[in-house]
Amino acid sequence: MTPATRVRHASAIAAVVLLGATACAADTSTEPAAAPAVEQDDASDDLIGELINTEGQSVGTLSLSEDNGSVRGEVSLTDLTVDPGFHGFHLHETAVCEADAPDGPFTTAGGHWNFTDAEHPGHVGDMPALLVIENGTAEAMFVTDRFTLDDFPDEGVAVILHEDRDNFAHIPDRYQSEDADEPGPDETTLATGDAGDRYACATLTP
Ligand SMILES: [Cu+2]
Image (tube, rainbow, N blue to C red; front, side, top):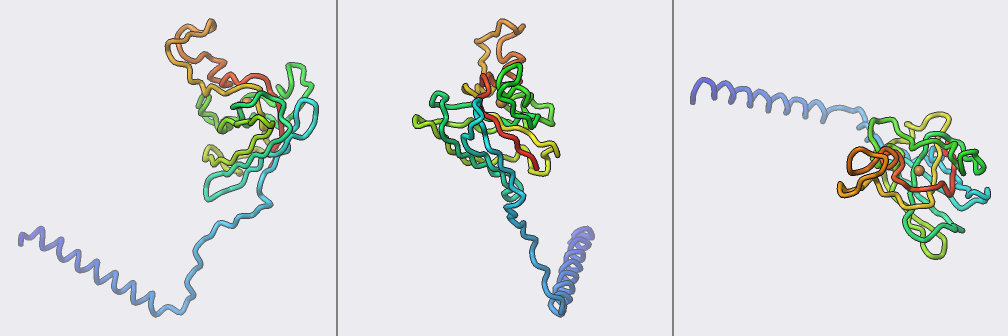
């Protein structure tokens, strides 16, 4: 045994003795064991938004709840008159749902909610596309870690269901926009996913 290995050996024994001492101390303790921290699922903290269409009629809800460090979203929509298929579905930055906004329905909800430098589809408020089926309903459950419910600003945000599909800025380099200098997604695509007009809107306020 070299002097160096002897020293390491001695340290290992010391560590074992120390661990033993700690275990003994714990065994003789009369303190009740601390209960493990359990995250309470407090339904009152959930955020629920009721979406209205451009006629002001309710078409269902999006609810968001904390789920072990991530957020669970549940969507249940009915009476949708958009084409069946996938539709862009995002949180937008301003909690205002104005069907008769001057620039078009629900445009006052602003752009996608985002507090990072990311572009679409990396925005905080980018959620999975919603599949509307032939009978005009859409049901979905998803989990996201893009935000927590604590991240919501006091004024809230809006959720928007769009008329069109979200392309998630997936524009292969063989395509070039008239507005861009180079192939691939242009500025509009990187901001919106080209999901088209806004069909329904809800505010989500903590
Ligand atoms: Cu949107």
